[in-house]
Amino acid sequence: MISKEIKDKIRAIVGDEHVLDSDLDLFSYSYDSSFVPLLPPNKPYLVVRPLTTREVSAVMKLAYENDINVTPRGAATGRTGGSIPLHGGISLVLDRMKNIIELDERNMMVTTEPGVRTIDLYNYCAEKGLFYPPDPGSWKYSTIGGNVAENAGGMRAVKYGVTGNYVMGLEVVLPDGRVLHTGGKAIKNVTGYNLTDLFTGSEGTLGIVTKIILRLIPMPKVRNTMQLMFKTLDEACNTIHRMLQSRVVPSSAELMDKMSLQAVARHNRMDISPSIEACLVIEIDGDDKEELNKQAQQISEIAAQFNVIEVRIAASTEEAEEIWAIRRGLSSAIGAMAPNRLGEDVSVPRDAFPEVVRRIGKIADKYQLTIAVYGHAGDGNVHPSILCDLSNPEEEKRVHLAVNEIFDAAIDLGGTLSGEHGIGITKRDHIVHALGEVGVSALKAVKQAFDPKGLLNPGKIWP
Ligand SMILES: Cc1cc2nc3c(=O)[nH]c(=O)nc-3n(C[C@H](O)[C@H](O)[C@H](O)COP(=O)(O)OP(=O)(O)OC[C@H]3O[C@@H](n4cnc5c(N)ncnc54)[C@H](O)[C@@H]3O)c2cc1C
Image 1 (spheres, rainbow, N blue to C red):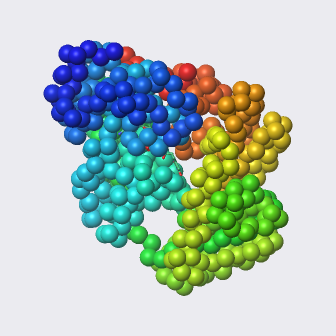
Image 2 (tube, rainbow, N blue to C red):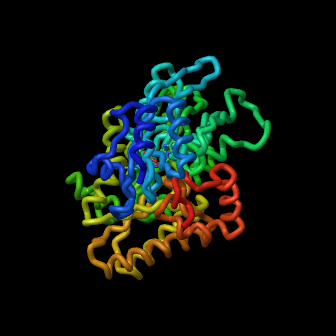
Image 3 (tube, rainbow, N blue to C red):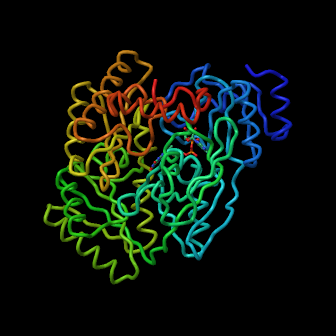
């Protein structure tokens, strides 16, 4: 619990209307977009919405002095329970910090507060012809601070990388309220340890990100989308490998398996032949139409070597949107197929993609579960979605066993527990398997150095 005296001090820092403590409000900040069950202990004692770094710092100092847990929160689109306040305390919501501070066109960098929505940042830069590539599927809602905390990826990662590839510098409020600045606009910077990289992907367990400097690149002048249908998964994956080896690097290469396609067909009332086992949605970009046509031609020729049965090249922006709508609507289409859907996120070396999908199929058979598989095939990041009814305890048990085996399969193939969603609560029991005892003790030593009292986002990353 938080005493009235401390609540009053917090109200004095951020303003009365930005401190919430009604039952309804506390409930609203007790869950995110993960599959962590709604449990009463997950409720925060207080929700605090600061506006400035100074306010964040003052709240953190007060919390530190009074041993109060703090859980940072952006838009709560996280898939692993990172923003769920597991041990009460303060839910520190950064959604009011939504200024884009500066667009530095000469250095091609943007400085922003953490509560800006990803898509708003993209559009702001795009208006000046500058490109911020990371595009998580949630970008209409997610905050840039949440993206940095999770090192979020997206569809364009295959060509342009993930959030961390663009973070140049950070302002971070440490658990005791001190303000740390890392990195900056200098492109080459090897002064001391790379703290910018350390905080990126730290899941809100080391500090509160209050300012972010991001590198931008010139906006590609033209883009187009292709949809390719295959009779086998191997043929689809081999097309991607050959493409990348031939230096035709698409900006996105998304794969959907048969189950995913049938979910879309049912949801959108479309006709997709059940003989199709895999579909690739590919985006290409470049400087002019001629270059784009050449890339499309090369991809079509490569796909033909692997018996592609249908190639669709969007003839208009509307058609490209139509193709992307299928991929972007996949999550809802799959979700509509069963009472519950457990979405996972494992990552393997690119050439192990077909094998991990095959193993997931075997796991589905073994545990008599329906698992739809889709993902960012161009970078080996697979999203298996287990369709199930968790109100049935016997089925729930099978789901958990299946999830464990999916993690084992990914690690066995040289991959890892998470490509982009982080560890949070949902994967913390598997972290030792993924990193080993020495790896986890190194992480804990870092945590101890920044957060000796263990007050920031407790219960995340390891059990
Ligand atoms: C439909 C859907 C599609 C998605 N697609 C993708 C995808 O393609 N790629 C991908 O990578 N992810 C994806 N995600 C997951 C999610 O959107 C990302 O992890 C995103 O980065 C979370 O941002 P957020 O603002 O919602 O953060 P939250 O969920 O609020 O928080 C996430 C974590 O960051 C911490 N945090 C938030 N803000 C700060 C801050 N300012 N300082 C310190 N810590 C902070 C929180 O404590 C928590 O641990 C998807 C989610 C959904 C629901």
